[in-house]
Image 1 (cartoon, rainbow, N blue to C red):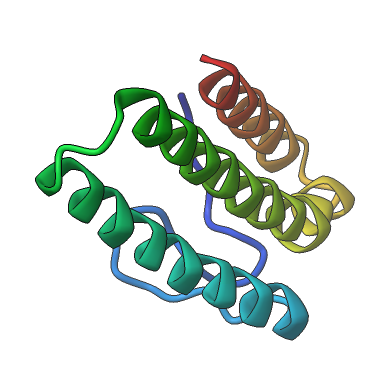
Image 2 (cartoon, one colour):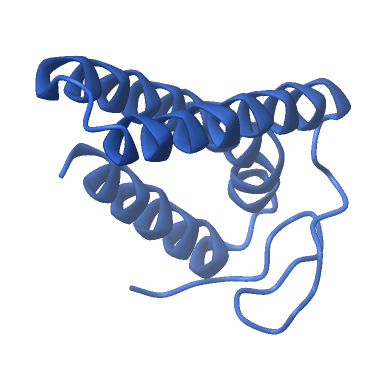
Length: 111
């Protein structure tokens, strides 16, 4: 997979930070991640207390869905800011690399 510098200025793997994260998405994602963190701690406690397996599995499913929701929000941000800029830039190589990156992200999310 070819990766490109994000339209927001971030470059994969070089330690840069995104500067075009939508403020509402950032707030929402952080809130969700904190809630997920609490759910995971609850799962640990359930396992320690040897709670009924079906109850643990139900909570685990809830955590997985919450993480998928975070992924959707981050993908939305990536498409809205980074991908849109790369595709509109007029640079065919950059746009093609972004298409490839998007497809790889989609494939990873459906595994």
